[in-house]
Length: 523
Image (cartoon, rainbow, N blue to C red; front, side, top):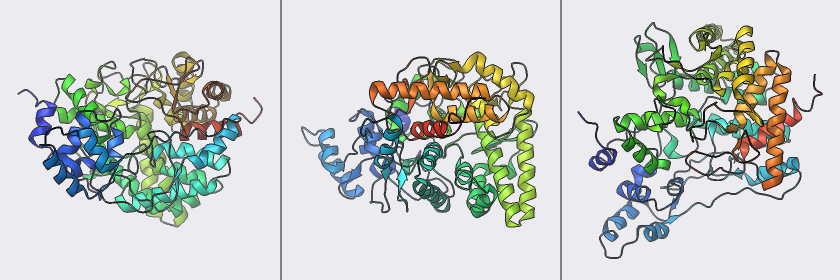
């Protein structure tokens, strides 16, 4: 049987393909506007599909839909004019600020990136949050999950601990409200999360006594872990449910997932066209695209059977090394927090989980044939997954053996070092999370991990290369950017949208490097 064409599938049941998630409490733009939404996105009224899903309606969504059904039949109807008449479109948040010295510039940027949204309006996608927060910048006008940890590094270093604490409180609020932390504070992202860095945020803000911080936030930490492990109790070998899986021989690991299997609302047209380009069932393609968005690595040849063809994306077939390392860190944090709280039963259980996770990382996600960590294709264990910068996350969290860390250092020097820092991967596919691009969070985790395992010279070299390039590009452009070309002094490229400026995690990592590793004299 030939899989349904994406447009035929959507036309046949424009709303049936979307089921509310277990914790969803807000309707998405697709659910609110139906055929109007599809028409706007598929005819590309806006160059960036995120513009429409971030717009605010001028009246009730039901009224706008009714008017659309009437007016679309009239002669001379203009969809673009209709949208502009009925929606307030978002402005492009270009956080430029005065061009000062780079450190002064970053300090001037922090207030420009602060947003407050304590009261949601009917029909808008932005979720209400009780406290101010820092956005990444550019088209990213909302609170993002894993971005925020790296932004918080800089806030703390720059004396804006108040903002960092507000952001932590917002994330705790999201867990209490939705049962997990969504990709961002938008209704259309309530079906997926992002790499679980909440425990690292707690650790950052309780640096003097992390166990006390974990105890304070124990309920939230356990709730986030339960979200990632939902369904584990009933899994048979070779089965998966949402974000948890069992390999054929019974090993318990995690994967990225999304609870919806439609095109992403912010990139609807792009996802429809991607599914049309392949021969797979469209809903499978969309699920894997969305799962890659949960990873934060959207997109990379890392997720694809053919790295050069995004239509071969197979994210849900992979147990990612970075996700499983982060969940091992979360399990250790829960064990420490429970022990401090006097809950010995929970402490023992989660310590055992952390030990088991570490063992699996060191065996199942380690490739002894080539000497590096890699994702595991749980459906095909013989699939040789490639080296990526994600392989350094076990070092960052202290979950590698010393021989593994030494081998990883050699792999980094051989394959991932560029003139301007750490490459994301060693293949150039045209996707943004591949060569020649480098990303601030990956520089931070690699540097911290290598230094932790006795490779301070290599760690310092990566940090120096990265910071020097960020500074040179700043002097040339006046901008702090989302990503950089690790081979040349210029903005990174590729992917679905232009490189954005602001930029939260670049600012945070640059400041943290300068005030930490690079402030100390070289060994």
